[in-house]
Image (cartoon, rainbow, N blue to C red; front, side, top):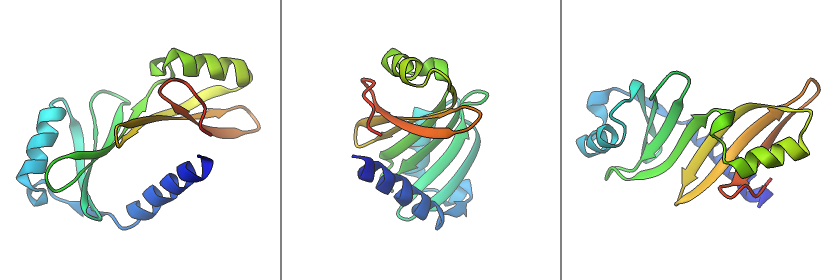
Length: 142
């Protein structure tokens, strides 16, 4: 599982290196319509062509960043949402409080792909930074 997650992260980083910025007028209308329908409160919107996908980066409220990848038919393929630590499922909070008592949660991302949700939680103390990956039920998947 750890190899799968590392592969996923490497793939995202690799794909992002080839992304091309787009003007809104260059995005297919079916994609724009789906985006506007799903995220009517989006602001600070930026579009990119990421391989065969259309990636949009935006915010829905202060300090709530989103990245969403659409295919050319307007279907959401992947979504990443920045969360606050208080928005984590209780099971994940409990695990971190028990296993990482001397750490604080620095960054939280909720990643949804293929109907699967993974929480990426960065914890840190004065000496170390660690990325933890959890299923929705709070199980650590490394």
